[in-house]
Image (cartoon, rainbow, N blue to C red; front, side):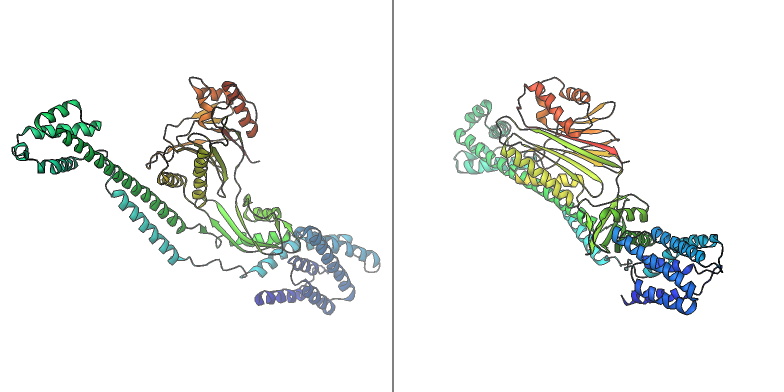
Length: 612
């Protein structure tokens, strides 16, 4: 603050020097310098007093009166402009000073009959004042802002980042250890079959009087009988007729032997099931540890701060914003991982409230690139300092709509959906169909959508978020409660769209000349811990529409190829309104079902257009 006050005093004292510079008998730098200093906003009174004293000492009385009147008119007009528009553009202040100089000079020449000079001199002086004001304003602004910019060379928190990377490597190592453990076992190994056989004979044959006769010789038929019995129980769950008859021929306790063998196998199968469940949980934990490692690694690699390289742009931003009545500070520019620019800046209004769109115009002029504030930013800038974040403007805009029908007799729909607009220019459409209908199906699909949104908002990648969601559903472990997942991720910068399908119905893309169909064959989420994600990528163009539907929309068309029928339905609807398109699709489907809704039906539609 002291440094800034010192600079304002220096600027004011420099105004005295302007009173000594004469050009063709005029002193045009006086109004030009005053107008430039007045546009800076602070120290106006000091500048006016110092320059008045300088003119009183250095200039003749008539000349002093002329430029004193110019200064007065300039100060009043600039202040009125700021009062009306919350700010004053540099060209407006310069024009005011130039016009006031010319007019007052001309009127003065008309009154001074003895020393009259050519009127074109006054006109040229006004033009000179306008140009000089534009130049001096830039110089003064750069001088006042020089070294007042906050220290943007903040050293990176290397220790903090290193610790995050170490944590990420630790979690990744744990994940690898879990994944390297013994995988699932589909059936009993030969060693386990031998243990089962020993357990059966150890319980019954050890206390039998005929044990030595049955098992003493290696060529005893009991070995073959028991092997045949165990194999039949392993395959069918019970002893077949041949194994039973053969065992009864050689063993007086065949019934007890068979019963004991069945019990031993039941326990062994239960143990195998629990063992496989444990392996599944290990893999689920490994995936979650891997996801934690990913997010920590991402946090340890922040966006690149390019404020130092773009210091000129930040200074220009202050200048442009000041003209619109906004004072900005602590501006920081970042280059994100996707190559886009992000701006973070503190802003407050000089007086009253200023619309954010005025700051947006200043940002676009300073950075020479279309920019947009975050969607949750304030609409007005007040006197209190507020942080604003700007992202690069997207090339495409999107509008979306939905149409739904609840199954006849059901209280709620088992389908759930969401539209998520990300700050990085991605639009994510999610659609989930819970198995069955009613409250349970609704709760299940709602959980799927909520988990996906939370993981994505936390910074996880799409596939990682889907696997984390599936892990949670598998661990939840409710039988017969599975959900399909249909996701479309549209990049509004490039127009590319990625589709992620897990047991979902077909998706359709309506181009101006055709309707494209994307089909999935994977299982729903929550069925198996090793999730199969069908991923496809398509390039969208302005005017394309994306249509996502649940199974209930296609299954009850009652035609041999429902996807082709749906393509014909979509192609036959002439509308560019996503909401209308979704409603008309359902209306056509109801023609095939007799006006009834035998299942939950949901249609999501999104259209993209190039921004003008």
